[in-house]
Image (cartoon, rainbow, N blue to C red; front, side, top):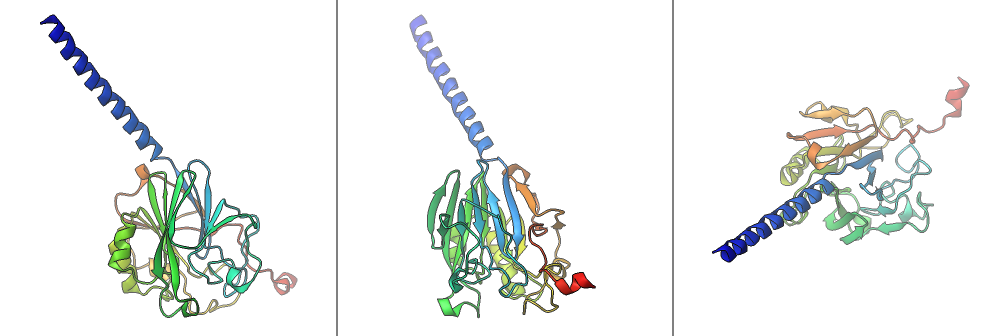
Length: 278
């Protein structure tokens, strides 16, 4: 009986020890997946995302003073550049043969597929550029999903309405960067609502809208509105006082929220010698 009791005790101890080890490993994994991720808004549709380990990706840098009236700031660096499609306001002017705003040895990702960048997994999904734009390059558009710090961050580029297949492939979304402006240049109001319903992001970050303080001419860029008129019709809107914000799994809002960033202070209005003389 004593030998049998000892055997049962060791079996119990082994089970308890295994459960404690599993619990500890789970806690470590949960802590690993709840580390802060930094999102910076440069301007237009361009963001820089920094992982907990310091890996950085720059998404859709724009060309200076092409359609947009302002420059891409010098010195904005990243380990990898993600490009959704070959339009000058998303590819740094590369498709036009312009000097791009990133070092020559930078890793550039344009096509759908999966890439591991340190503690960040980047997945590209094949989409379609919103009508009627981009027909000169077949309306290709790569939707980028960043899996980092336990978060799932999606940048739509200039994608149009999502098919159910694409939405299903993307799956759960915590933070969604979507083109929105008051003139509905890329997505119409009903299309915006449909995508939000499909992906149900905890945080929606508008992008690809006009910045009044950066544009020298009224009505420029053509057909592009600001964000404020759209935001007035929405609930749960929060304007940040900064261009940079930390996000983590544990700090996601319980109710869906729209977060509007300031653009980077590195982005300046165009130099106007005549204004300085007055």
